[in-house]
Length: 484
Image (cartoon, rainbow, N blue to C red; front, side, top):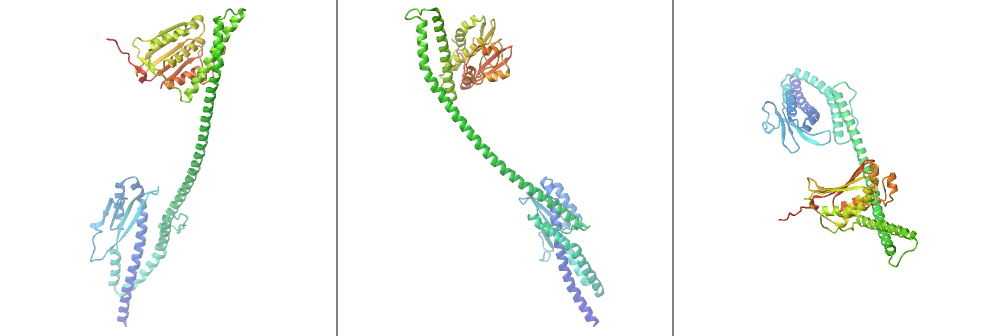
């Protein structure tokens, strides 16, 4: 009977040992899965920072605890970054044709959601086998005691450690799959499982905040794209309206100018006949004065019409330059001769400075004269009696030709300069109001210089005079050929 009891006890011990071995293996798998998951998360930051030395150090610390037989970390392309093998462990070898270890892997993801590597852990099952065989080899009494103790330990382990750990692990897996609303269990206990659950809860909340931020960002991007599309459509519509308005204005100016030139030419022609007394004296002396006023007014009006035609052509992109080589010195002399009578009448001094070796200027001579005469006429008009007007031409170090007209007249403020460059506007000062003009001269000169590929600059100060400089690009400077 006793033998039967012993045999039964031994059989029971053997069976219990097998059952215990199975349970221990399950527990080992669960704990190892959690270890792989948690430890893999601790490697995310050093892998993201390419700190492979820290990855190796953490593997070595894990190995020193005796929890693993080996560990490896690979990058996303399969290249090995770090490795620790305990006591010469070789994961590629087998003992007696049976695998004596468990393998766990974990994809490592950074906080940005980007994969940074993979962790492999090899957990030895030798401890489980040794414990089972030790229990079997014990005597019946020891086996019974061990069976009771083992049962208690298994019960406690399953209910107090493995159960909660399994529930936390399941929640971790669901959260890792994107189910961020999954509640985290076991958070009210004061043990390692509870601390792990609290860490998982913090991670879940961070994930929810990131998810919310991504939704808000997507919503903001969608709204911004819609606003950009609407604004672009508004701007395109405004641009088309502006182009159409500018085209209509240009056509109107051109048509109006052509219609006005015909009667004006008749007025100028007849006034010139009357001034020349072609058919005899006019009679009363007042008629002489009236004829001069008629001719002067007609000349001003035809000049305005010509400016309007030029502006309409320039703005419509239809103005064609008659390119030729222009002698700068001769150009300056010709323009000075035309404004000299007005300057002499005002007691003003006209001087010029043009180097003898000045390059030839490639451009439209009529337009160049129009620019220079316009600048000189403005200087004469806005310089008081006895004033000084200087014209200069030179070539700078970059090969550009520059022409300037400087006076010591009334000058302009910065706001006046901006107004003078706009069409139909003049600087606000008493002397500007004395000389009624169209306000087109400087605007037209500025547009002509853009046709030449150059620029017009104004330096002025109220009460201190004005200097206007036009600059031509280097390709318009033609070196003067010296005679042999």
